[in-house]
Length: 81
Image (cartoon, one colour):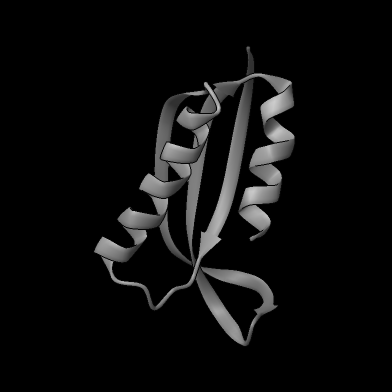
């Protein structure tokens, strides 16, 4: 297994329970691919470098995990959806 870091941005208007649901969905997807979650860092709401979907802010979440390289492609495709 290899070590990976993933940073993703969630819509800034989501409440804490919605944000937690998204983080848990990502965790579930990683563990479904036989990955292991090492650490989750919620950086909170921060200003974006440029507008994304007309938003100036986003909630940043940094996740550290281990997974097989073959699982990353599936995870990437799942995250795009």
